[in-house]
Amino acid sequence: MDRKADPKTQLMIDEAILDYLFYTAVKALLSAPEEAEALEDSAQLPLQMVGTFISIFHALHPNYRAPAEVQFRLRLLQFSCLFKRRQRLLSATPSLSEVNGRQDPRVEDGKHSTSTNLPVGPPGQIHLRETLPLFLALSAAQNSLQESTITELWMRLAAGYMAHAYAEQVLLLKETRSGLLEDIFHWRFDPSRAIEESSDEWMINEMLDAGDSIIKLWEDIKSEHIRALRPPTGISLTAHLEAMVSGGLSISSFKEKVSEFLSGLLSAHPAPLLTQLESGKIDGLSPTSTAVLKKRAGFV
Image (cartoon, rainbow, N blue to C red; front, side, top):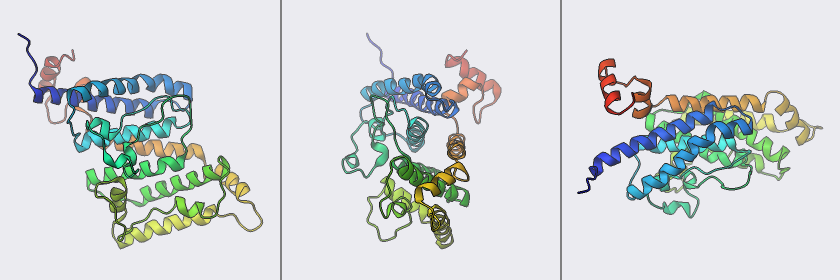
């Protein structure tokens, strides 16, 4: 007679594996060198393992709804993959709806940006402006989980992100239409906006509703960056932005700051149980108890 694992036990084990694979893939992406080939070599296998296990997981648990911590780790994986590999996207990461075992109706009207897959196929390029909503949604998810408030440090990082997105649109894509700068910096708290609750836009709006003093500081920091991006009289926009990118708006410094931010998000949450088992240290357990559990789990 065939014996099957208890469904609850099986789900607990599979969820632990899923979380472990998300965590491992994020670490691989964030620790990989910037060179496209090196990044592909070090991160490709963990990403492939995520994709393979998602298919198995979905077949075993079609009605699964991921807890907040697992969903956050997936958001972090999605954004890290976009940001680190945006000039050479070679594989896809799963969406929240795929992990949850159901199609999210908000995908159809674009209201849930993290529910879209990364491009699959030939090498392509994703531009910073396209990743900006995901960056803000990831930040909002972190604030919601930690019940925290945005800081001036984050505001300057976010405004810098917008500045780099604008420079990229102008210098790389040759877009100079009127209103582009304002469009990229439009993110602000809007108390009158009708937004579907729990959508990414709703979370971002909630994050930016941090009290009058924070709202004012955010607007001041954005205005400061907007003024800096506007060229002085007699200098072309292209020449002005090229000079900025060669100086204070350094792309290498920007990448480093965002990577540090992402690493901080990863370390701000307890590592998955399997990662702790692997390291031999489990939060809340003595070394002896950890050693016993590690042996029972087959980590020796």
